[in-house]
Image 1 (cartoon, rainbow, N blue to C red):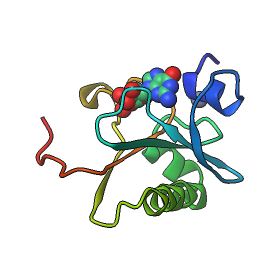
Image 2 (spheres, rainbow, N blue to C red; image 1 turned 30 degrees about the vertical axis):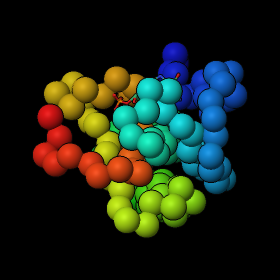
Image 3 (spheres, rainbow, N blue to C red; image 1 turned 135 degrees about the horizontal axis):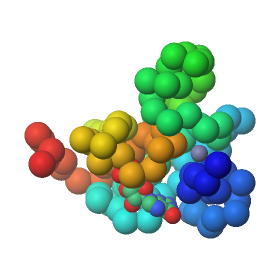
Length: 112
Ligand code: 5GP
Ligand code: ZN
């Protein structure tokens, strides 16, 4: 399978890794939309949060816990946003679940 984020997990594609767990990886987004913009992924390939929650709910929880750890490490004490774009209408461009951790500024709501 040709998956960009599986390539990052395999260290075939370089990324700035900020957090790693046994089954999770977190790295900085190449095109940051906020002062902190980190992507948190399961190392195993699952297309969406729903797919992972169906396949392995505990693993889905691990990925969320990793996102929370990243927010703490990045000092996002005044708030942050977790986003998992899912499917075409949401603009999901990589079919490997990734939680965006966004923070470090006041975030607009609703998003555009
Ligand atoms: P999506 O649009 O699927 O929700 O998010 C995909 C994210 O991956 C985008 O924010 C994009 O900037 C980021 N991205 C795309 N290619 C790369 C890459 O090669 N390395 C990193 N670190 N981020 C990437
Ligand atoms: Zn993948």
